[in-house]
Amino acid sequence: MIKFNSERLARLGYRGLTATQYNQLNRELYQATEEIVGLKLASRLDEAELDEFEGFYRSDDDDGAFDWLRKAVPDYAEVVQGVVAELEALLEQTARETRAPFQRDLHADLAQPSPPAESGD
Image (cartoon, rainbow, N blue to C red; front, side, top):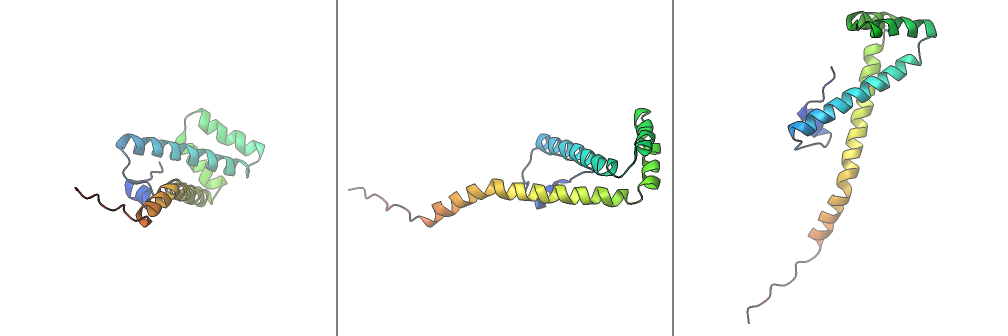
């Protein structure tokens, strides 16, 4: 299973996640990776190959499915790595875009002079 550990997520801009948030994000990233990889691989297979692979899937034969994939799609691991890299780039961009308005507001607040202290006359 592909796992985005907390250090990896922090590097991408996701710091301070609760355990629940971390687990949810990992589930969603795993599902997205699985779906995108599946679409990319399916587009490279003919109907007979898709049917053959689906047979492994229907029979819950994960080992057979992975063995078949390694033979039918020798660059399977590279496809997975490419999808993970694409998701990492998207996560990083999303984190930057989400933080940007807050950072602009913070910089604007810091750039404004503080009001003078009121005297106690």
